Image 1 (spheres, rainbow, N blue to C red):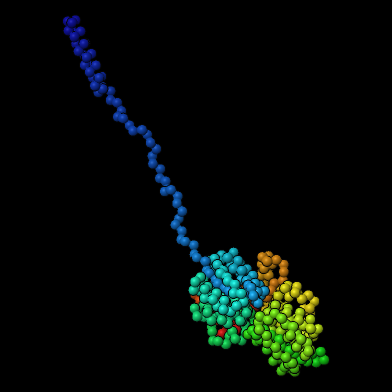
Image 2 (cartoon, helix red, strand yellow; image 1 turned 180 degrees about the horizontal axis):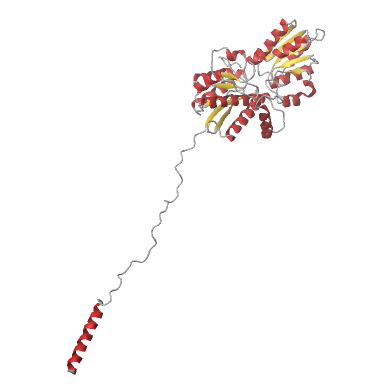
Length: 390
C-alpha cells in the first residue's frame, strides 16, 4: 500500500514538473513594445510666406546743363530735382514705388540735349521725363518728348517760342510766361516821377529766345511809355568779351540797360561797363541776379541798382514753401537758395500730384490731368492753358 502511494506521489510530481515546464499553469504577459509618447500635432516647419517681387522703381529722366554756358542755373535745378526725389522716396515713393532719377549733362548744347532725351526714352526706358533749363534747350527737347507722347513739365523755358508750336505736352512751371516777367519792372519805371524817370534805354541781349522775349517786352512797354531806345545789341550766346559792346554803350550813355542774360554774360557785361567807365542809373537783367550768392561774389558792390524778376523767393509763405526751404538748407547748407532750385522742385510737385491724382504713370493721362487740375507748389498755385502757359 505504501509503495502504491509512493508511486502515485512520484507521478503527480512528474506531472507538476511537466506543467511548470510548459508554462501553462500561470499565464504571463505578452511582450509589449517599448512605450513611446503619443504623437503631438505640430505645425510644419516654419517657412516665409510667399512674397511678390518688389515693384520696380519709377524711372524719371532729365538732361541738364551742368557744364557750359548754363551751368550755374542748370546745377541749381539739379539740386531742386534731387531734393524732390529724396523727399518722395523717404515718404514711400510714387504709387508705392521708389523713384529712380536718371540724369545726363547736356553741356548747354541743344543737340546733346536732344540726344539725351532720345536715349532716356528709347534706351533707358524711363517712365517719365522732366525738362532742362532754358528755352534754347526746352524748345528742341520738348519736340522729342512730344514725338513719344511724354508729358514735359519743365522749370525754365518760358519764351514765346516755347508755346507757339501747337504742342500740348509742355507745362512751364513758373508763375508767368517769360515775356511777362519784365512787366513789373517796366511798370515800376513808368510809375516814377517824371523828374527822376529814365529817359533813354539800351537793349543788350544774348541771341536766346527767352532772354530776347523778356527784354523786348520791357523795351516795348518803356518806349510806349515815353522812353527813347538808343541801342539794340544782340550777341552770340557764347560771347565772353564784352569790351566792344561796352564801349558802344558808354558812348551812348543810356539811363537804363535791359540785359538779356544768363549768369556769365550778366557778370561779363557789368565788368566791361566798369572798365569802360560807364555806370547806368539802373539796369534789368533776366538771369544773373537770380543767383544771389554767385552774383554777389562775382561783383560785390557793383550789383547796386541792378534789378531782376524772380519767380520765387525764400521768404514766401505760399503753401509748402517753408517746408521746402527748411529741407533745402538741411540738405545743402545755409547759402541762399537760387530760384532755379525752387522751380525744379516745383516741376516735381506738379508731376507728383498728377501721378497721384490719376494713380498712373501713363503719360496720356498725365497730360490730360496737367491741363485740367490746379497744383499746389512752392511758387503758388499753378494751372496751365492749352499750350502749357501758366
